[in-house]
Structure formats: C-alpha cells, structure tokens
Length: 168
Image (cartoon, rainbow, N blue to C red; front, side):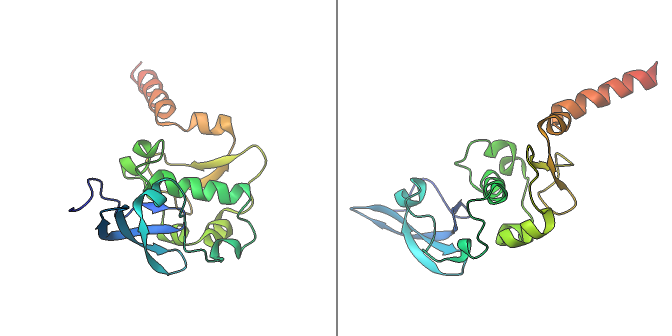
C-alpha cells in the first residue's frame, strides 16, 4: 500500500489543518498528520476527517470566546471553509480562484470579531472588492441587495453600461 490518491495536505477540517501524509494502514486506510488550531499535532484517519467525525483535538480553544454558536462564528467558519477546503461547495469560486483569508483571521476568530464587530440582523459577510481577499478593509456586513450589486456579474454589467454611455 502506497500513498492515497487524494492529497489532503493544506486542507482544513474544523480545527484541524492537514500538514502532511502519515501512513497507510491496510485495515483502516490513510492517516494524515494534522495540527489543531491550538497547536496540538496528531495522526488522524482520512475518513474521519472527510466525514466530520474528527474536527479537532478536543481542546476548548474554540469555546474560549463563548461565541461558537453565534452567527459571526458561523460566518467566520464558512469563510475559511470556502477558501481552504476543496471538498466544500463553492470552493471553486473562492479558494479555487485564489481568494485567501488573511493570516490574522485564519488563525483567530477573536481577531476576526475584533475587526468586523457584531453581525447586524439581515446581513452576511461580503468582500467589497470581489477579486480581493478576506481581510480587514475589504470586508463588511452587507444586506442581500448590497451583495447582489457587488457580484462579478453585476459589476461587469455596470462597467459595460458606463462604457456605452461614455462612448455615446
């Protein structure tokens, strides 16, 4: 038994960040070396990662801020997943296009919350520059209508209209 067909290196599963291949076990399959957000490193079975059965070392780090059930925390986790996990829906539109999360936010929900503040009712996380990264200065809490005006399609259409007007 050699290496697995899919390389999980660099992929995040909850608090685990896969740092490299560990070994193949004939009975259980691939094991990957993972590092938890708290710094603990362990070998974790690939199927446990993919099925969400192992999402971290069991530390209480994610609970220290008391917001792990909040809408802000859900937005933070979703942002990280769509930029770092090729197995997640819509990855191709974010991480697959090169959109990244700044190191400050990638490493700390508390830093994200300090920069973004409470999420107002009826808003979700939005990047002002649609080709820019998730980072302070490029993100805001936006309503659905604000986000619809800030899509690549809407911006391209507005640019085409402006070009037609200036050419007339």
